[in-house]
Image (cartoon, rainbow, N blue to C red; front, top):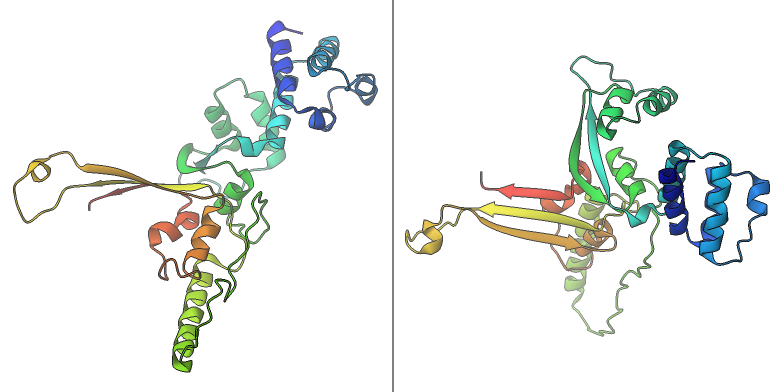
Length: 280
């Protein structure tokens, strides 16, 4: 086994937590079950890694084998990376059917030595691939938004408890007409919120970023800002462990008016969370 491949394998295995080591190595399916059983996983991690690399050298692991191990590790820890979305388009008049996945995998492996973007373009028979303004750590949520598969349960590491009426401990004797008006308004907000976000759990995104470029406008044609030729620039970033769920809860919680700004609610439809806003 080439020294470069051995070092790649060693570094990849070093990244794997000991609690996940056996699971990931079994998913890799390069080392046999008997070989894995002969490894003493109770030893220090450096010693375990050394033994595993020796086994890989005996089996003459290739670059492809090492790459598969790295891919499997990445799949187990996909939330630790920020994923970019690319849009693939075909030439006008081309076949609009989705490519055959088995044929795609076979073709993709043959041309993997080329640049990744070129490999994807050729293997999938698409005309071009364009990077979209859409990123997140949650790969499943990106796929759900891109392919409009919203009606599913998304993994969450944060528990949220919805506010209950009367949870603030307020005891106010309100006029029945006020209660009636509040109920009508609450139903309106709930209806609008459901129309915009649906009644399913929202895909997980951590942020949305807005860059604004605008000329200074004033009735007074004087001052430094009025004479400035360059546009004014500012950056606004909304962050949350689950941004879309947070936006969905704003109006029902009385924090914002319904409906919310289209700049906030258009994220799934536009498949973007990076926006540039300029003067018309």
